[in-house]
Length: 385
Ligand code: MN3
Image 1 (cartoon, helix red, strand yellow):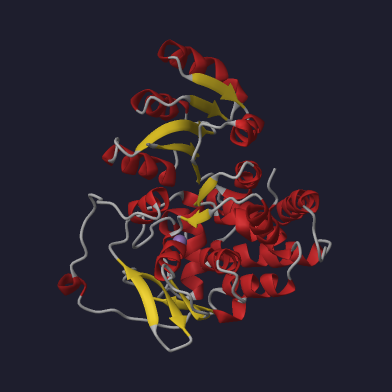
Image 2 (cartoon, rainbow, N blue to C red; image 1 turned 60 degrees about the horizontal axis):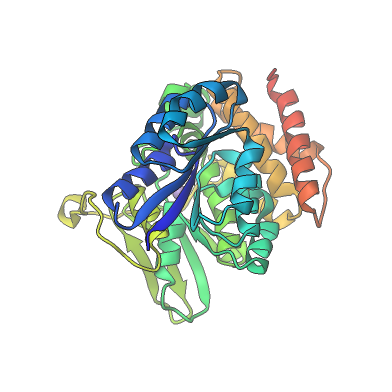
């Protein structure tokens, strides 16, 4: 029987690559649901090509156009983000949900999918950063299995297969981003065009800026903390500019197991879709003789304060990681609109955390409230209208 797939954010970087994986295996997967916010033309094209059962367009103003295009194909069309949560919660035709919406907006639909016990291929790290304890708790309760799509977490997940051992340490690798060897002055003067040029991975704008500030690694550290239930003190970031080792696990006997490959997101996406099976994939093969050298170095927390902010936020706990994430999303959007300098991003986050109310044991309602409050405060600091 084919696996029936829902892709949230199908027109984004992860979404389009997930569809590329599905196109390589028409005998194994079929597309049940596709969603997008605004990219109506691509959504329509994807829905027709993959013969989706249902699509949701987030922006309600685009509903008419999308439904007129897809009605002749007998594809059901809904509008608005609440529809996504409803479909995920009540549909019995979906086996696996690729959660690849960008940012905090992924939390609600992911929770809805979890409540109905579906398998989640999680690409949206903000979901676990903002509400990791609640999300993993709900997943346990509703027997929903979360499989990571993020390349580092997929590598860790793959390294843990067949192990019944205690994790001594997670070695979370990072390319270091475009500013690895830049000075603070160069970073302060960097335009968005420079910050958007990632040396290794081809990704969406939000995660590319996060990689440049290294907040991405901070978010991933928190993501790993919840996915693998390890204390943050046991998660060591390792700069590995070649981006060939996608992360490693160190066990209590001193053994280190990692996953290697070319930096191509279709590998972890496919592993999440096909798990527990490993199936063929048409991507480049790693040529170790071409790579020749692997290098490693420690991250520079002075130059990349976002790393420190992330460790402090998760140590503080409660709603602080949620506020950190909200402030970061606002700061990144402001930088992309030329409202703040690249090096202002960490100070916007720190000031927002400083101004927000601490809640030690937040409910899900508290999380949504904290996110809202964090955004309001952060917007004051970046003068965003
Ligand atoms: Mn990653």
